[in-house]
Image 1 (tube, rainbow, N blue to C red):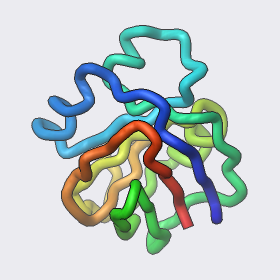
Image 2 (tube, helix red, strand yellow; image 1 turned 90 degrees about the vertical axis):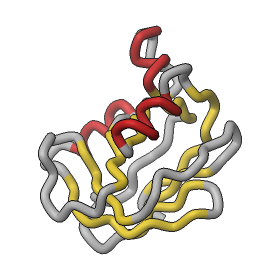
Image 3 (cartoon, helix red, strand yellow; image 1 turned 120 degrees about the vertical axis):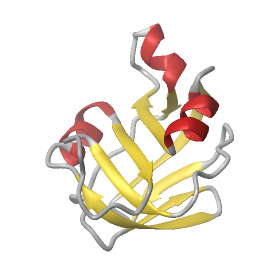
Image 4 (tube, rainbow, N blue to C red; image 1 turned 45 degrees about the vertical axis):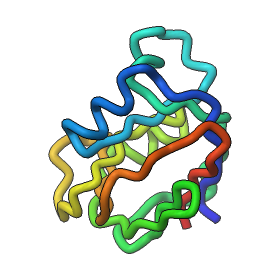
Length: 118
């Protein structure tokens, strides 16, 4: 397991971003910015054991996704802040440095869901 955490809160704008942008923004739940909390899925502080690479698996709840692209700072921000933007478009090139692209449709996320990378 490269990374594992549990969802603790879902911001008011998460559903809109998922529907309009095919994305989910993650942040550790110790972030103190209310604007960021509004747009993010908050989760327990996790430990990143290894870098995330193309070909890895992302699991959210009971849904599994193939990682297709990893931005050049996504692993660092995931490690430092629990932050990355998950894009559900299967792109093989990240447009922004903090993005992780995966193949599949945006899942419904609930408080208590486990998010992990393997």
